[in-house]
Length: 635
Ligand SMILES: Nc1nc2c(ncn2[C@@H]2O[C@H](COP(=O)(O)OP(=O)(O)O)[C@@H](O)[C@H]2O)c(=O)[nH]1
Ligand SMILES: [Mg+2]
Image (cartoon, rainbow, N blue to C red):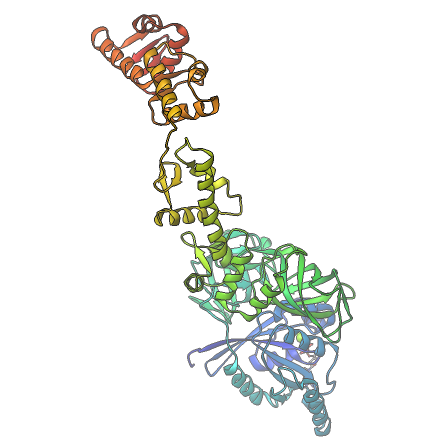
């Protein structure tokens, strides 16, 4: 057996009874119908799976039901197709679900396929020729225009070798899925196996998974451990993107798992209820009104949604538009993911498209930059996308948000961010990363400088503004990280200076008017002279030659410089008086022992209870003394 170089998911598509399941069995040896009811009724209800290895290519077949009642099952299987095997019975030619399935493949962005004209044993050469012409005509101008059309019979096995050859040839042209990207496995089945526990299966659409991995179940946000992985019916060390994959999970009951949920790399993604996208209405669909209710299908999930059209009051058949879907249930999708929209009732496929913004915001009329943003997302240039995301954010965009909104790998994010900051259009203000538009950063910088300047003007007797006051004066749009970075830059540029918690203009110093200098001296002297029997603050301030507001500021200066110490709102002492008191206590300790009562303290200091109690409490706080019952211990 040759080594596997490529893993490709092939999906069948086509009308009921056209021989899809029989063809998969003829190609792989496995009949894809697995449900009891399917076997009994002879129709496919849910997805079926089979495998084939041909010349280094591993084909995972997803066989879908053709009946119109089971299109939603078909959709769960169609997500993740690399290649479509369009099945058209030679005796019936193109029928309604041929068209619907084909439309779905086109809307899902399937790029390659092979057409099988099945049941060729039932028609003569002339009919076969006519059907081929019809099919060619139908496919003209579509992605299958030049696809091989192979007449086959599952009954006589005619054409099977040729069909395998064409599948192999086409598979080599398919751009496979990327195993290096973050892991995502949309779940299409969940069940339990005796002795193993919960198992889920799905088409691995990106990344890889193996035993021992930790994965996140979304939208549940549950972390789970992978016990084992199977691919193609065998246990494997790693299953990679493009393979049908079964994952045995520890720590969860299979009943808590269901189709539509996704296993993913932990901590990277967020489920959503609001998606911006480019929507394409099929030419065969009726016109679509604003705010229509629809069915939304992406990956293996489906939910009900309301569609808001941007810039259109309704959409004509065949038209496309930017739109927002508000979903009833949370789903995990990423930009670039394809989805299908079906009419609410009667349920028919009416269109689909690609996700542009998976974590969309509420649509606002005043959001004039929206269309340009969508166009940027569609162009797909990473640096440009980051720049626009930063521009449209309130205070910048952080690493985790970029990751959740783009699905890019960490290195891809870092690389794009580096190129963006190098261009000068944005600033990184944090580690790992918060991108702030250059304009917003410059605004913050200027606001800070202006605020400090104004503070100095309004408060000539204060050395500068408190850092926290400065930050909160900028409003909530300036993130703390932006503030810090802008402040650091202003300090580095020697425009501002930091002094503890105070921010000031570089080189600024308080200059006192002559009467202010006099007042300062008078205030300090008043407290110094009073010793421990200090005067009321109001009284001291009332005596100086400047008005109350300035006197208050001068007092603040003395307190800040610690010449004066405030021990209660009403009581202020000079530092020398307090120093003498501490000396006296330590002398007392030496001569009389470490314990001192309040009366003795009063006697020692010659002060009344009014001063003694607050002073002792101050000394307790200063750890000069410690309270012990009614007494103090001198420390
Ligand atoms: N004569 C003939 N009958 C076929 C062929 N392929 C399928 N059938 C029959 O057509 C019916 C429907 O086939 P099935 O594979 O279930 O169709 P599906 O609904 O597209 O999956 C079954 O009775 C098959 O036996 C074929 O190549 N030749
Ligand atoms: Mg079938």
